[in-house]
Length: 104
Image (cartoon, rainbow, N blue to C red; front, top):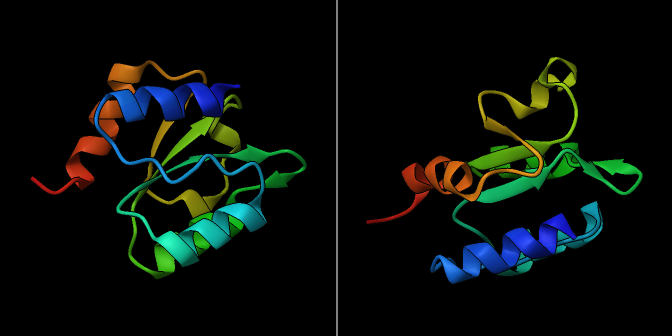
């Protein structure tokens, strides 16, 4: 539900949204087929984590913002220096985190 809401709000803010993806496999397929300028990753996707997506994005030089309902102390190092926001994020905070990665 949160992913759909975020997707709608980003679309309304003028972003072209390629998701949401409810699984790692679907997210990796979207990245491979459609690509992205920047991604918004939820730490937990059903019973999986978004670690493989973060690794793929990092390997291709694509930035990402991380959303989590968990303590940031528990985040694995594969999120690196990505911006981390708690769920549900305030849309203003998410937009501010995404802006540096968008073309003028």
